[in-house]
Image (cartoon, rainbow, N blue to C red):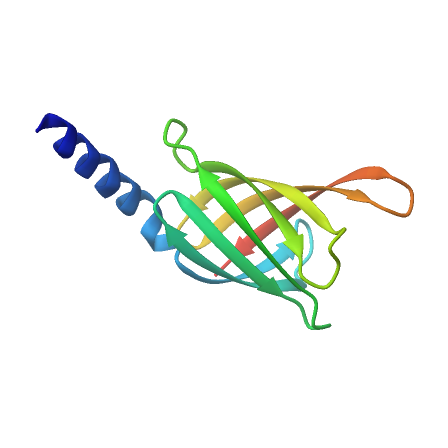
Length: 123
């Protein structure tokens, strides 16, 4: 019986931590006021399911698993719908329900260099 209670506790805790992140965000590169992507986040347990589109019609989708031990942080991956070779990784830190800080790492195919970019996802 205690196992059922523990499971209910974990589910409630995840819901309390992450449900407020459900919704739409704008992605701006650190140091820039220009919106590069329009994002939609759907929260499923401790996972953030992210889809995005830019003004040029490019789109991506990805998932972030939020840490149960280190509240507000998570790691994930994404891929672009228009280019199967375009994918990368995210490390995120939730500042509050309206702001998520993101480091994006990907490999640029033209010169095989790893690129790290910083973004703020803002409501």
